[in-house]
Length: 322
Image (spheres, rainbow, N blue to C red):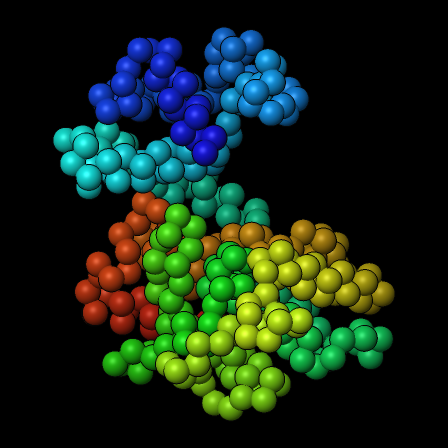
């Protein structure tokens, strides 16, 4: 991993063993990420293979968000070392990573406007006759859209989801379980609207009612190999194709520039940021709740929360609508 390579190379310049890393080293490394120097040693303007003499670990200073991602990865690595009793304490623990006001604004910049969400909803409800997609194909694209928005699901998580991953707890609330990036396990509230969309899609593919525990089949099955899930790349293709159709329709209707701009930028990653901003700014969830729903590495797993806290978090998401 590039994060490990950069960090180990940097430690080598200090002649510090990775098992002897201290919090002061971490603070210094974080500053280093924003301005690697000397540049000739650390930065290359072109990509090269690692065995190339001109290869360098950086292509330039890292943005604040990229630096934060790097630190989060390394923190997880040192947490593993701590659990294995290879180090006495995680040197990253004193370094707090929080959503701050600037990061909240970055979510807002990536947020699809309410006007665009209204356009998308209308498009799926009354698709243009010239669309050329079967009801089943359109239903699949629609559900992928709603998965991305309501669950902040990554495309690999969408592809891997099985019907049995949508489950009901003892209180009657519906949840989505997933194992995502970094083998991070999470359970995310399923809103009433999303559950309705799942049932709608099930009807399109010949199933009835809500998902059942015994249904281990993928929600989005491979078109060529029955019983296998689609690939993450296929999720991206489906979303891309339907967004192109939306963009064409928006242009024909003379939709506002904001709608056209949003539709030209949508991806599963964009929907994930939209979901975060929506939860923060419209549903009123706390930062801790949003970070838990997004399944970030530096947040305690869902199973670490009390049932009452889960119930409160679910009620805040339950009535969400696109």
